Length: 330
Ligand code: ADP
Image (cartoon, rainbow, N blue to C red; front, side, top):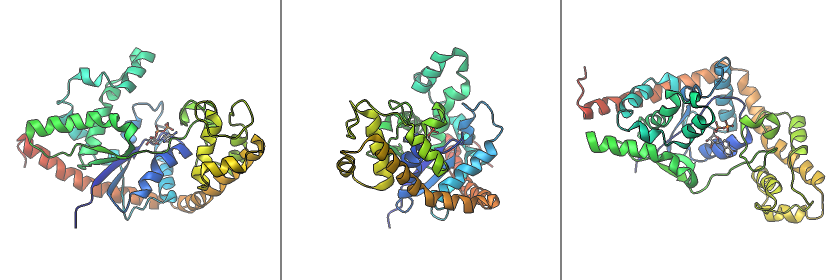
C-alpha cells in the first residue's frame, strides 16, 4: 500500500474560534483525516509574536482543541499536539535560520506591514516567523499544507529553506505544497471587504460558541448593500454575496436556489432564515463542545498523547538532520 502523504497545519490559540476558522480551516482538516497522515498543531509559540497578554493562553488552548474535536477532528486518526511541547521545532528552526539571508525574511509582507505601522514592533520573533513555520512543517516531513492555491506563495519560504537544506546537506525534506484548489473564505459581517477575523470586534464574526440569540442579533445587524435584491454579485453587492456564501455553507442549499427563494423577500426574512440556518448548523458542534468541556483533563490527555507522538517523529527527523549535517551525536 502506498504511504499516506503527510499533512501539517496549525492555528494560534489567540481567542474565540469563528465560522471563518471553521469553514476555512477546521472543516478542511476534518475532510482529509482518512486520506492523509495529519498533524494538527496548537501554534502557541507563534501566538507569542502578536498576543498582548498570555494570561488566558492555557484556557484558550483547551477551548480551541475542544472546538476542533467537537467539530469532528478525531484524535485516533490525526495527531493533535501542542507546538511548545515539542522543543525540536525550535531546535530545527535555529538550524534552518542559518540558511536564509535576513534580507529575504525582511520581504515577508506580514513583517513589512507591521514595521510600516510601527518600526519598533518588528521583533526578531516576527522576522523569524516563516523560519519557525518551515521547521513546523519540515520536522514532520509534511509534503502538504491544507491551504488553497491562492495561499501557496506563503509556502515559498518553506520550500526555499527545504531546497537549500537538501542542496547543502543532502535530500531529506519534501518541498511542501498547498493541498486544495480552493478553500472557502468568509468575510466580516461589519466590514464586507475584509475577511472575517477576531481583530475587527465581536460583532464582525459569528463565534462557533455564540448563543442562538447572539447569532440572531449579529446577523440582523450585518452590513448589507444598497438596494433590496438578494442577488449574488460579489463586485456590486459584496455584503449580500458574502451572506449567501455563508448560507450555502451552513445549509448546503445552492446559491442559485437561495436567490430564487428570496427573490421577492426583503433582507429581514433572508437574515432571519440565515441566522436560523447558522444556529442549526452549529447546534451539534455546540452540544458536543458542552459535553467535552465538562472534562478538560480528557482534552489535555489528548494533547499530551498527541504531543508525545509528534515528538517521537520530530526527534527522528532531528537525528537525521544532525547526521546529514555531520554533527557529532551520542
Ligand atoms: P483570525 O484572523 O481570526 O485571528 P487566524 O488568522 O488565526 O484567524 O486564522 C486561523 C486559520 O483560520 C487559518 O488557517 C486561516 O486561513 C483560517 N481563517 C481565518 N479567518 C478566515 C476567514 N475569514 N475565512 C476563511 N478562513 C479563515
